[in-house]
Image (tube, rainbow, N blue to C red; front, side):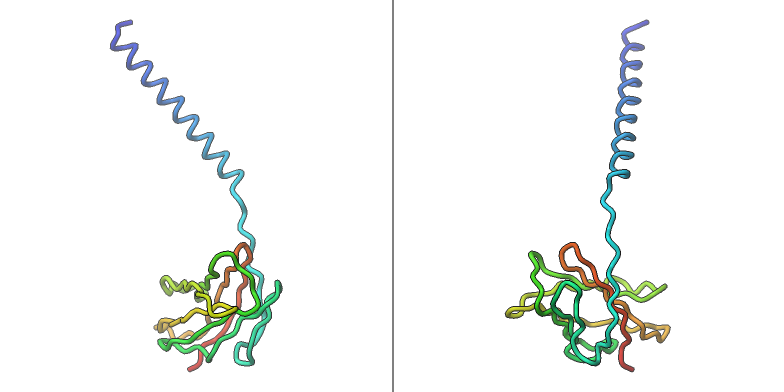
Length: 144
């Protein structure tokens, strides 16, 4: 075996070993990947005021949401190490990136939100609120 053949053999074996290590790490990561907890469904009428959260505190809308018009949502009575977020989506419809990060507002949190118009005319939205590791989902409809 010549020196060139030994180099190629060594390179081939090294690539196979590297590939096996990489495949093993991918399998290990996928088997130990943390499972995201499903969002806890909230059932409340946003028009009637604050929506109570299971861990304490409440979520409220300053005004009824409308497409294309800004409104404010508030969180009160919740302790969070990092700023909470709210993701707005529609079922079976891509409405783009609609994530809002809350900012401190005295003892609570607030986010100023503007929902895009839906060309299909749908008014059914879902807000997924994330407070640290907890997630809450609240379906709601926008005003006409």
